[in-house]
Image 1 (spheres, rainbow, N blue to C red):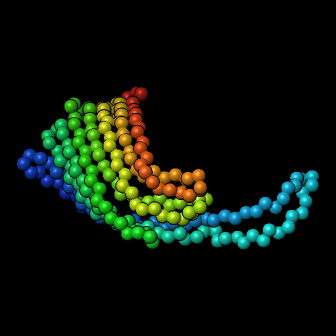
Image 2: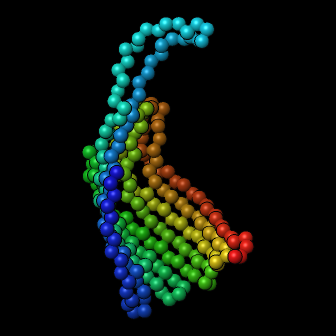
Image 3: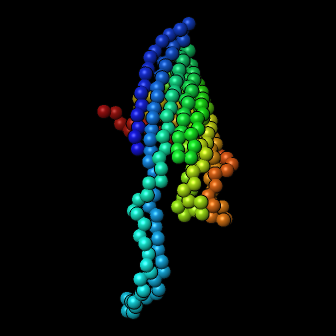
Length: 212
């Protein structure tokens, strides 16, 4: 794959509010290769009586087959606004265009986050974000192998806290992620339909055992 990204950053202050502004563009091109397989049952045997089997006449497919490529072009902007020492608010917008051999789709995805620091060692935050993503591709073992589905937009909501000093730290978060549901049906047809919801909790910590 190929990745190209351009970023422009600047800082400003208006009406007592600090702004950290990021503007950028990105391009990603990904190529996909598949490795098909073939096989046949020759018979039965063992080391004592290996037997002789007829040539099944299999045709060995190419090792790798080019199944296509995906090009994603993105434009994005974000503003991290600081309201004194306690509050930060982050607003962002991203516009993605995904192009494959079967579709050319675009969508805009917002991001919103807020951070509150009641003490120098403690931060509480909440965030909401969307992501426009390439659709799934049916695996080689499915009846509709190689079928590419439409792009999808995922959504994630997260709340959490981070606390720590130079000697210790802890982070905890609750999140909910909604994205397209993919599954293999009883007819061996791969589908992308409905929404899969993932609820989770994360906890991590660190500490210094001795001072140097």
